Amino acid sequence: MQSIKSSKLKFVSAKATNTRLMGVVGLIAYWRDEAEREIAQIFHLDYEVYGIDGFYHLIEPEAAAFNELVLAVTGGLGGTFVTVDFKSFVYLVKTAYQVDPNSIEAHVDFDRYMETFQSWKVDLDETEKIALLQKLSPPIDNPYAAINYMMMRLIGKDDEGTKGLWLEQPPNAVEYVDAPYTLIKNTSTLLENMVNSVAHVSFRVEALIDFEHKYQLMVFHVTLQKETNKIIEVKYLEKLTISSIEASFNLNKSEHLIVATVKDSFFERRFAKNNPEMMKQVYAQGQLYIEFNPDNNHVAQNPYYLNGDIFALYFFTHTGQLIIASFLKETLDAIDALLLEENAYEKSLQFICELKTDDPILFSFVNSHFDNIFDFLSYND
Image (cartoon, rainbow, N blue to C red):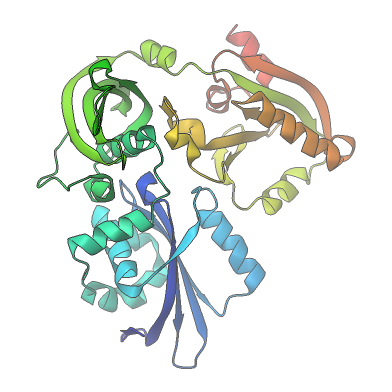
């Protein structure tokens, strides 16, 4: 077992989510101190902007509270845990730290480990790095998954994360953007002249990115090996800055909503406690809870949408409205059936109506000054 001298801990084991291609990883490490107490550390690692943006150090944690915290930190990542060794643990933490060395300043418990942390050296060679990155990735069963993951990592300036996607790792990273940006949508079109190729297949790829309060459409030519879905070549062709109206047209998706009145003032508190894996965001008009899909299968779809990993949204307004939204009618139907089964309508909620909009409107409502969905819709009619 690897010792940590300054904190007098011995490394026991570690596990990480297989979500490295999403640009984030949940990491749990187990240690033993001199008194043979179990020490558990939970990390949330971001490889685009935030670095080590979550860190929890727990001494002999109580199982239920620990599992709830793990869900809160990693439950929205859409992956499963796989075992990693100490060298891999160091690599994952160190490469996240390099993204933003100042990120650890927000974590008070990290101070006691700084001396040892700084003494750690990444000890994986390129072959081992690629093997680890592939271990921390889901199976890539179609070319769209390979292309979408590649575009996410390139637009996020996360070249390290692409290493497991290439047939042969390119000698030098190619700079497509000057800072990490967000891939909002990615559309791949099979090039007809490559359909009959035995070994290779090529696509015209149009990546819509959120670019400095504007939007850019970046166009690439991507070639893959058919048998493995490994990337052979990425050629940057052109880019075009587009208006928010054009971007909205590009992102057009219908949204399905349930509107209800909350009759029980403790309902939201119970809802939050029972769903620790949901991401909570606080707004002036209320609280938004985001429920993510349990996997990242949306990345294999064409076109790929950034918000394709969202299962449902729940917005509790300060005035007592609950708006539940999903992009799929069947998802909303399943939530409606669950609320009926749990007698939520009878005990805690008053159902008002269901709505369908041609374009997503919940996030616009959440960010507006309105605290009533019907007032918002009337104003924007």
